[in-house]
Image 1 (cartoon, helix red, strand yellow):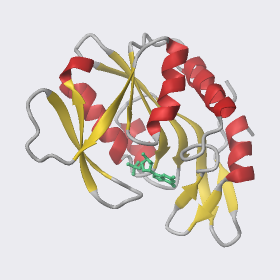
Image 2: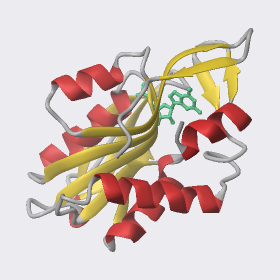
Image 3: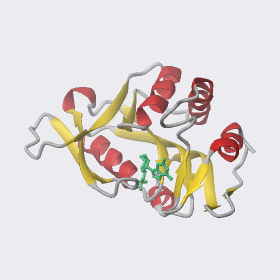
Image 4: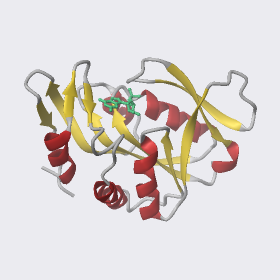
Length: 196
Ligand code: 5GP
């Protein structure tokens, strides 16, 4: 079991509706020592890639992506949720359906911060149905930039996102993959992953 799986078993809370709460250490209160370890682990897993930018989506990806960008020594850019319907032409736009809030948001990245020369590592906290990642991939592609890989802290392997993204041929690394979880028994089962 890796450092993250151990922490999820210790402090994660399984909620009804396929939601795993990790807000005591990952996406509300953040354990900075753990964030550093997550940053180092993504850097190790993508060390063969020429990353020029780390891209995530607000809000909960931002903290994690900062630590990853720090390891690579590159800027971190986050897609902003935009309420404005009349989006001007100086941004890349994607439509993303929120798994946790069940609403649709347009997310935008300024054209100033992504260009065809960029090699992008996409980072997020969770992967469920893959909507957030697909939105971020489409923003990178609109910019004519290259997706070098995608790094997820917790993938819920019983939802379809991971399969869809891997079938599209992208290099996806998830630090923990939850294959099953039960709110009644509080049990969490992780997928066995090769130790690097
Ligand atoms: P997807 O777009 O893959 O369906 O969902 C991913 C997004 O939804 C992530 O950015 C994350 O913020 C949120 N999310 C999905 N599942 C969970 C979950 O079980 N727990 C928490 N805390 N967030 C989740």
